[in-house]
Length: 386
Ligand SMILES: Nc1ncnc2c1ncn2[C@@H]1O[C@H](COP(=O)(O)OP(=O)(O)OP(=O)(O)O)[C@@H](O)[C@H]1O
Ligand SMILES: C[C@@](O)(CCO)CC(=O)[O-]
Image (cartoon, rainbow, N blue to C red; front, side, top):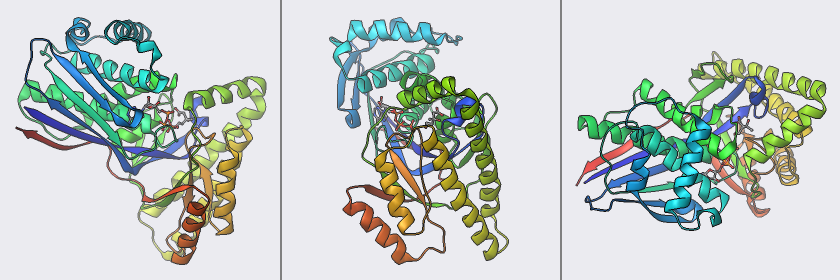
């Protein structure tokens, strides 16, 4: 019996959330906080099942594999997303009693699982046997740190490796081509969770480090400087799809004003990209100080531009006020409306300042993670044969 374990990071968007949906540049980095999927092949039975364990969303399900395998294409095919989703929905309604009564979160995660399984494994002509799939994450679900993309990247990654194992008998590290495949399928899964994502989240969770991203273009993968960021969870849950819809509506009403705001965001992202590249191999201490001073200003500017689109939240503003009392820059990250804020901690910041900031935030009920961003994307943690 084989066990495969694959992990993928969450992400934070440094600049360009929302404007990226309209063709502007966005910058994202991978987080040190990751999701992990464990796939255990079980002894084959006459009536094979997949045991789905997604504890973060309270889901523990046994699904029969035969009806799922019946809609496997059996060969590589071009996917018609809507048609595919309809097939998966019909299938889930047939094989999972009261499927429609599950929470949206749970329904979407099951849809994404089948999408990845059918699209990646089901396009080979390999036999499917009993297995358990368990996904856990240290990310807060629905908080702007890419839990959905990290989840989807793990699922797609583990199915790509299952195919490799079954066809070659061995498991190698993810190649660049495999990562492209994983990111492409994870994007499709993201479409289930978000509707019309830009693609920045799945790209960052798959490739890691610093990603400069423009919709419809090949992402530019850059080394990331060692940025220290406090990730502050406002505790306010929200759904990315609702926030992107609200911004789209605002843009329809005020196309010129919103267009200018998006243009300004593009400029902020491009300027920050140059500064971050300088920080990868700085020439002097002065250069580091100057770059952080500018980054501080750009974070503030970017937050206020996002707030003007209506995607801030009183809790995010309260977190920002506390960060400002400590002289540090703070912006929302991801779709906003709650979720996480990010505080930039330059290397010259006094230890006592950071300690005081963290203590104050925690005393007001916010969760704080002190992180260094820019780690690896999707990786195999291990593979064993029992
Ligand atoms: N560990 C997990 N197990 C199962 N499903 C998950 C898990 N993490 C995320 N999901 C799925 O992703 C959805 C969360 O997506 P949402 O976009 O609202 O949050 P996010 O990805 O954290 O935010 P953002 O896209 O702004 O970074 C959940 O509703 C669920 O369907
Ligand atoms: C709000 C948004 O720009 C970022 C979500 O992490 C949506 C997207 O890019 O898909």
